[in-house]
Image (cartoon, rainbow, N blue to C red; front, side, top):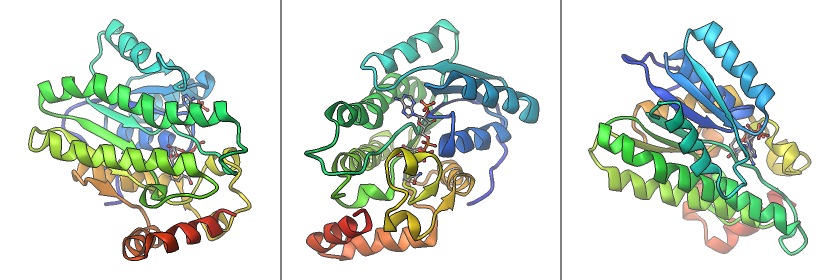
Length: 264
Ligand SMILES: NC(=O)c1ccc[n+]([C@@H]2O[C@H](COP(=O)([O-])OP(=O)(O)OC[C@H]3O[C@@H](n4cnc5c(N)ncnc54)[C@H](OP(=O)(O)O)[C@@H]3O)[C@@H](O)[C@H]2O)c1
């Protein structure tokens, strides 16, 4: 599943959170296979650097749409800009997201609500705006980035885990809705990955991250391969797969207590 495959015809792929980490590597996977890119995140300079690198390395066209996905109007603004440019999105990669460790009752409420806006609401809105075109064309799809956090509640990271449970549930429901239309819905659920995420979420000192991480390139490669193979759910890495399986067998109280310990 690991290696990026070549496409027969050029697609246009929109990647959110493409300025770093898993999103950047996913964008490179699609570009390596010949897809044209539309790159979204807040940091325009990093998006421009990736766009220039993809254009010169893979000979694809790459545009950028700098946007803060915590804004309620973000998805509509992105869709309007794509239409203004006369483009159609074949594949939507909903990757942008962030976490925040700490007691729910003590953490900053604006950050918690922004997290729901980025991880859930903008992801849902972008999918709602772009999926009908994919269905009309009978091809393309949506690759949503959840997390192994999706499989159990996350004490000390309650909102983040809940947002990722939403992403997984939403994605799996859409898999059944689109059926055999030719459109692919796939959910990538990485475990700890070596990106800026852990520092941003105050997770670097947790047992969860000290147990080891995968690289963003490995995770993206697994996600890309899974999407191309029309997998509904991709959990990269044996350790993460075993954890996701074990949590289904464990009593719920045990699963949440173990998670609390990993993130203390
Ligand atoms: N790293 C892990 O251990 C891990 C594990 C499981 C799942 N994930 C998920 O993987 C996805 C990618 O994270 P990552 O690990 O690659 O972390 P990362 O390196 O911090 O990348 C996060 C990306 O999201 C973008 N982003 C954050 N807030 C945004 C906002 N308000 N508006 C627009 N873009 C925003 C960031 O760009 P700007 O800052 O330029 O806006 C960046 O491109 C996330 O959904 C995360 O939850 C990560």
